[in-house]
Length: 376
Image 1 (tube, rainbow, N blue to C red):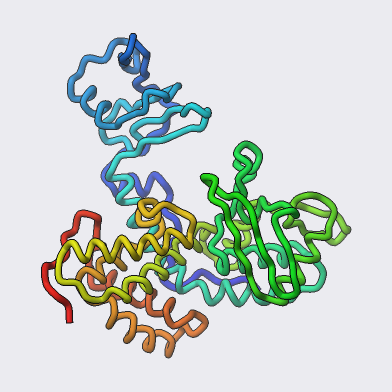
Image 2 (image 1 turned 45 degrees about the vertical axis):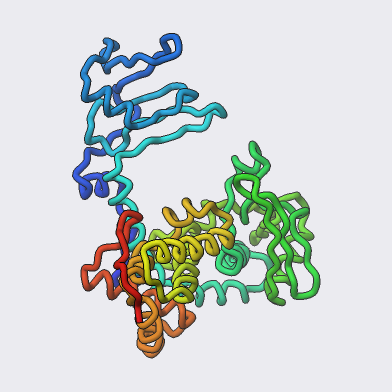
């Protein structure tokens, strides 16, 4: 049985719609744009017609984009209201992007609001994962359910085959047999992940350990494979996992949503340990310590962790002194209703985010200054 869309869910908005909401024009780098040519130790810029660019405002905008000198094949949007401002290739040939600040802000608001609906959808997702884990044999749904279970239990990245091939860095779907060890009910994963971060993670679960032991013994170096009705083996990739999540949730959720959800819940739990502060400096220090603890769990830098994986409303609730009482009271309220399949902490975070959205409380930004008072 597959889930119906969660009530009040916020599916991923199409990029053109996000651009319109930000007051921007949706563009792409296949259209004519401004190009860059090296001239001695500097650069000159040519407009869409190939003529030297002389407009001072446009040149100032280009300078503000801080496009790295090492980029090649640089394309720059001729419009100052384009959602995408520049693209190029870095020294390793990877495509890089520079977006309009309003695009990033609006996109992040949509992404963070969607955490509310994701939290509400988790009980249905987990129920289907449990059902699929109980399937006989090694069918596709069972292996996908195993990966989703591990996404929650380990907070690992989902993985990308291109990174595995070119960078020798791995995630869940690109793990090789050599990266796993099964000892009774314990499953140990040891591998090099994104940015060279070494991961050594152990999960204790008899059922999952049995499944991992079986897939590990299949021919081939890929760890996660399934066996179809004809006995043919197939490797699993990240797109399979994301398709499975969309299927069982009825919404456009992806593996990355699990990391954002985990980061948000962990940040809330860390922040309630620092409920009191009497100065702006102390508040900033407490927030940094909380973010650092989450970043360590997720394998990110603190700056990326705060920017991409922690809902800003959680930080806002800490700054205005409401987080502790909100988490305590709303955990009881929500568990009594329809979020009983969530942990108390998760249910409380859903309720906290929902309440702040209903109250119209703006998320905290990095620029918000906390009140200079001691909370009681």
